[in-house]
Amino acid sequence: MDVIRQKRAPVYEALEKFRRQRVVPFDVPGHKRGRGNAELVSFLGERCVGIDVNSMKPLDNLCHPVSVIKEAEELTADAFGASHAFLMVNGTTSAVQAMVLSNVKAGEKIIMPRNVHKSAINALILCGAVPVYIDPKVDTKLGIPLGMEIADVKRAVEENPDAKAILINNPSYYGICSDLRAIVKLAHENGMKALVDEAHGTHLYFGPNLPVNAMTAGADMAAISMHKSGGSLTQSSILLCGPGANVGYISRIVNLTQTTSASYLLLASLDISRRNLALNGHDSFEKVTAMAQYARSEINEIGGYYAYGNELINGGSIYDFDETKLVVNTRSVGLTGIEVYDLLRDEYDIQMEFGDLSNVMAYISIGDRLQDIERLAGALADIKRIYAKPEYSFFSAEYISPIVKATPQEAFYAEKESLPIESTIGRISAESVMCYPPGIPILSPGEVITKEILDYIKTAMEKGCSMQGPESEDISELFVLK
Ligand SMILES: Cc1ncc(COP(=O)(O)O)c(C=O)c1O
Image (tube, rainbow, N blue to C red; front, top):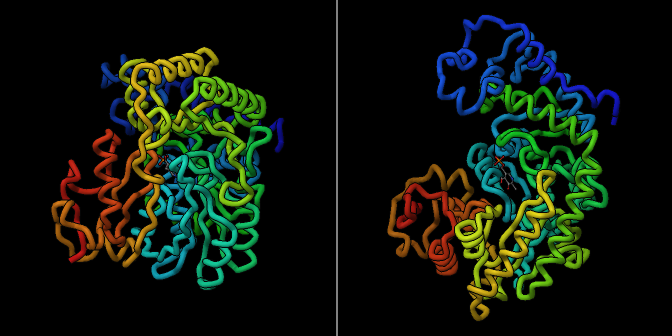
């Protein structure tokens, strides 16, 4: 990484220059630096609306970067050790979809763990590729899906030598990493691309003693949520490419769905955050890891809760663990993670990242403070004292192996009918159902609906998980194939 060059932030600098010029706007956006929308200015401030501008020559154009955005992308690639980087403004969803769409076409196979984010499965609906799912192992005590074991990936590769790519989560929402280097090697030895969903892994490029990142492991592409641990504005993201990527083709794929009016607030936030990570990321994430470790020890002192860390590593399905992730298992206090999540928000004004049936998660980042961690630990101790119940057992894991009968695209576009959810057992789903977050479908289009899946959905709804996927708002009905 070229530290001197990394001090530049070309998009941000161009916007600052533009602001000083006081150009008269006869272009969109129609609020005209806020003058046409006083309420928006009083809400967001003049500085913010003043740079909410459209593409123009001095500010470049995200759809075909030739100047300041191109330079910002080059700096981003340099900071992340990539050959090329695309700045993305349609979320990491668009980065995951661009990775999939640029590597597999209709009818071609892609190997992936089944516990992927919905953006990956939705990419298959868009392009018609065929998933070869690898069941992640599950930790039935913690109730979480784990990583892919090498033996399982090997088997999938041997049985599907015609697959074009392998998609890997690095890490999962819960901090779990597969053996990324070995999977990338396996992919390349068999003529397949290695595509990595690093929505939860921006910091792996900067912090010390963290699991290996996709570019270092030799992967072909990676989708990076800068807006998660990287500190940029919500929805801003990055798509990284390794050596040999067909950047021109990938750019055409990105432009199939990318807005033609990219927000300069998002682009500048990517530029500023990349500079900050390049210059300060090492120290920042060292502190974040230390804070998460401190939180784990405070929470584990309470008893009942289990905030897990590196001790989970087993050389296989948990090849590595991202210690910045603070996930707390709540089973032994007799409460679901989502119940603890709701109590923390409603009774203690603490907003957690997510709660599922067995765990609650705090996203620890550069913006957190030790006193907030202490407040969280205090609130958890209080909740245990006031609300603890006998230990429960609902589900062994946040994951049920699917029975796949059709590809996501076939099922999505098939002739279908809507049925009361309780009458759908044995039918093939045309819709996804998931708790969001984490956004990993419990049911995807093309999969058989079983009693176990319906029991899970019912319990998740009863316990207060936010559900999404189906057309039916209250999920009382599901579309199934005719
Ligand atoms: C693993 C994973 N991939 C992709 C995404 C999509 O990211 P975004 O919300 O920025 O579109 C998420 C979102 O949480 C995610 O958890």
